[in-house]
Image 1 (tube, helix red, strand yellow):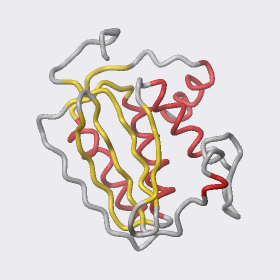
Image 2 (cartoon, rainbow, N blue to C red; image 1 turned 90 degrees about the vertical axis):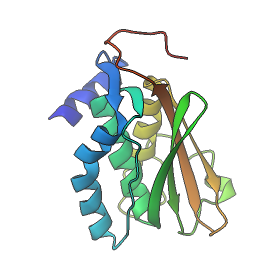
Image 3 (cartoon, helix red, strand yellow; image 1 turned 135 degrees about the vertical axis):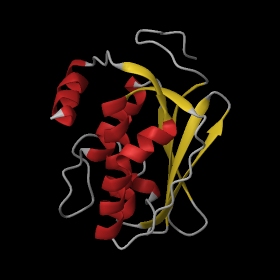
Length: 169
């Protein structure tokens, strides 16, 4: 129900529940769902998050971001990892699949674009919209294993913040 409400907010471009969240706690809450996805795709996932790290996001949007991109990545990946760079948290979803062909790279974030038989073409578009509404960015690069690394950068938070604090760079 929270995801459906968040989808409604996405269409209205309104996220008013952005706040500072402990990153480890967010991943602890998501871990059972991530592990279900991993089991479904016979993948191994490793989540290692420093307990002192905070990010400034809408919690439901963050959950959608992680679950959508991990589901896409699990179809061809075997591991996720995370790290901080400057004032942004960088979540890197790394797969060892077939990679993204250069000719379709510009289209993968477009709505309704999919090269999967059962794909609706909304997952990555939703991820991009949610990440951008949470003052972040999403990109991808080809990795040395032949697959793809999706990099999501979200605002770093050093301490608890209140809702409505827009002084995040």
